[in-house]
Length: 280
Image (tube, rainbow, N blue to C red; front, side):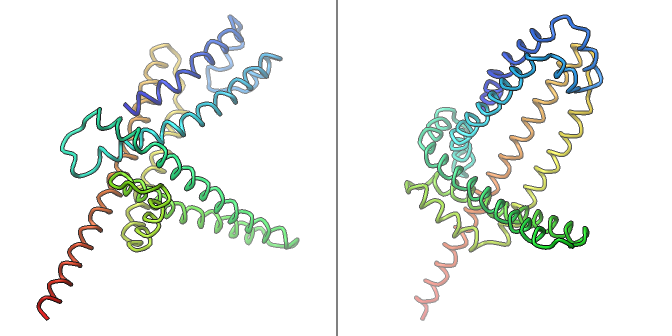
């Protein structure tokens, strides 16, 4: 259902764009320049039509990004609910009920964590730029080390913030508190069980990055020459998108399992303490 929702969203923009490109090129022989892959010159030769295509593409990108952000927050609520251990089987009615119930909380949590990631990344990059610009005679190797170090710090921080977001949403599914209470729990849970949580998240993030690199290598290098090849490329690209959704589901389910495991450990520790006190 999640895959279908995003396919429909992309199609809303893709089909009009396809028709616009067909109208722009018509029966022109310039399309032969696209047989070996994307060629920007073939589009710039369209003249005024090129500007309208660029505005259409940029507007469509903003539309898909905004609506996709909202739709993702909506659907994630149902996904988290479906991954809870007490759910023996999937129910579409429960899925969409959880989507609606947790929509605003998940939207606020996702928005706040996204803004924190952007803010922290911007501050780290700005500090690196100030260090480099403050010295006029800094060696290139040192500039490279500073740039690499700042990127490494950002990459190391992102899993922490993703943990906060996922723990917050996992807590919100079973509790009626506000999204800010959920974020408080997310920060507390992340740092109280930091290393096991961080190690698990780092493995999952690296898996997603590796998968993304594979997609970026396979899809652009595929140059179909027939209609059947284009259709096959479409099918393969959709399978990649579906696989990415599976990786995201794996991440959410892992965080829910970690939270439930941590909760069980707290209960066991409390029971042992109570037994010891009773023994004394």
